[in-house]
Length: 624
Ligand code: ADP
Image (tube, rainbow, N blue to C red; front, side, top):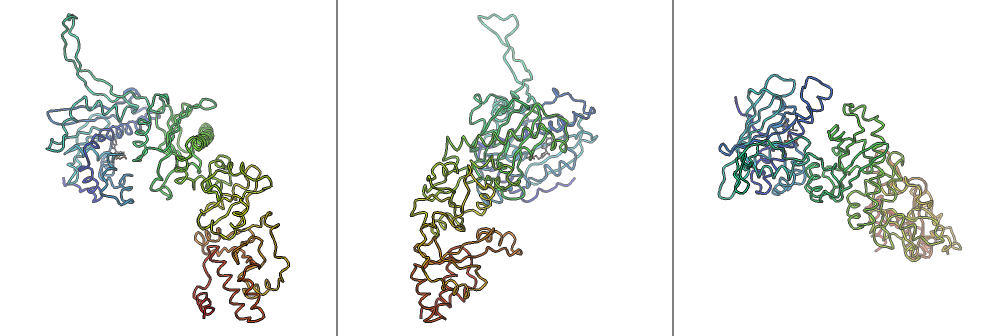
C-alpha cells in the first residue's frame, strides 16, 4: 500500500517539533495519555446508555509498557478507538490544531517555544520517536487498523488484528546522539515521574508494571534479603485538580493545568476556585487568560466552560454557563446534580444548569471585584485586554447583565489621569454636581484637547474620557449610576455652564448670517456657553451623536445615519469678530469665514471635511 503524504503544513510543524529543545520533549507522554483519556471518556459516555459496551467504569484504564531492549513505549487504552477514516482525518493532518493556527497568525515560525509550552497533541511523540505504530479498533466495528509513520514521509494504514476495542500506540524511541539523549524515556522511574508531573488528575488509572524489592519470606530482619517482584501499579492519584482542596494546590499546578487544558502558553492572569453548596452543588475552577486569545474577536472564538458531572466530561464547551460579558473566562464546572445521560439539547433547558450559570455570574463578578481591590495594577492589565467585553455586557441582552458589570468597568479620568471606577467618580463628585460628566471622542488624547474640556479643566470638574466606540453605547445602556445621570459634555448643555454665559448682548444677526451661508449643513447656529479660547465647536442635537455617526458610517454605511449638527460659536473670539466685521464690509469674505469655521468645527469633532480641496482653496485665497 502506498504511503499517504502529510499535508505540507503538517510537515513544517513536524520539522519544528523534531528540532525543539530537549526539555520540551517530555510532554509527549502527557499528550498521548490525554488522548487516551478522552477516548475513554467517549466510550464511557456511550456505555451509560448502551449496554452493549460491556465495560464497567472501573475497568477503564490506560496501560503503559516499556521495553528497553526494543526501545519502545507502548500506551494502550480501552477507549472508543478509531476506524480508517478517523485515522486519516485525525492523525493524517495536524494543520487544524489550535497551536499551529496560532503560529500562522502570529507569523513567528522561528519561535519553537510554543511546542514545549502546550504541545501539539499526538504528533509531539515524534520528538522522541523515529517510528510510531497505532493499532486501533473502533467500538462497533469488526475491523482493526494499523497506522504507521516515521513522521517524515507520510503514513500507511493497513488492516490488522486486534481483539479488544481501543487503541495501542507504540512509540519507537530514537537512538541517543551526541547532543540528544532519549534513553531516559525508557526508564520506568522516568515514565512514572512524568505521569505524576503532568497526568496525575487523569480520572482513569494509568498503570504500569513496576519492579519492587520485596522482603524474602522468612527473612532475617537483621540481615534482610529481598526478591525482585513485578506488580501492576497505578501511577496517578486520579483526583481532578478542581476536586482538591484549594490550599493544597500550588500555583504551579493550577498554571500547568490551565495551559495544558486550554492550550495557552502563558500562565493565567488569575485563578478562581470555588466550591458551592446549596440549591445545586458544584465545584468550579475558572481562569482569566493573561492575553487576549488570538481569535478572540472573531466568530471562531467560542465562549464556554467544560462541564463535568461527578468527574465525567459531559460537554466540552458549555456556552450557557458564562454570560457574554465574561466570555473570556475559561474553566471547568463539575456538579453531581447534573444527570449524566442528559442530551445536549435538553441541557440547555436544564434548571440546574441555569442555577449554576446564575451563581457563576455572581461569583465571577465578585472575584473580579476583589481583584480590582487587591491588585489594581493586575486588574488594569486585565481590563486592557477584556474591558471592551465587560462594556459590551452593559448593552447585551437589553442591559440584563448590567448589575454584574457596572462596578467592573473603568474609564479614564481627566483629573486623576488614570482609569477610575464609576464608584470612585461618584464618591469624588462635588456637592453641587448632579451628573456624571463624560466626553466621547477618538481617543483619550483627542478628548483632552477638545474645546469643550476647557471649562471643566478650569473648574476642576472630573470628566470621564471615553475613547472607544463602545463607550457611548455602554453608558447609554447603563443609563445611570447610583442615581446619577450621565451627561456627554460634547453634546449636551451642562447646567454649570449656563452661569458662565456672557454673550447674550451680542447682536445675533451673525447667527442668521452663518446659518444662511451654510444652509442645510447645520440645523442651528448658536452662541456657545462652553467655549473660551476656541472660536467654534460642533455639537450634536437629538439621539445620534458624532461617535455614533462615525461608528454607523463603518458598520452600516448604506444607512447614512447622521447626527444633527449644531454649530456653536464663541462671540468673544477675534475670529468671530472678524467675521462679524466683514458681514457688511465684504460679504464674500464673511461667507468664506463662516465656511472655514464650520470646517474647523468638523475637524475638531473628528469628522471628515466635506470638500477638502474646496476648503484648501478657500484657505489659500484668504492668505493672498
Ligand atoms: P487533539 O487531541 O488536540 O484533538 P491530537 O493530534 O492529539 O489532537 O489527536 C487528534 C485526534 O486523534 C484526537 O482528537 C482523536 O480524535 C484522535 N485520537 C488520538 N489518540 C486517540 C486514542 N488513543 N483513541 C482514540 N482517538 C484518538
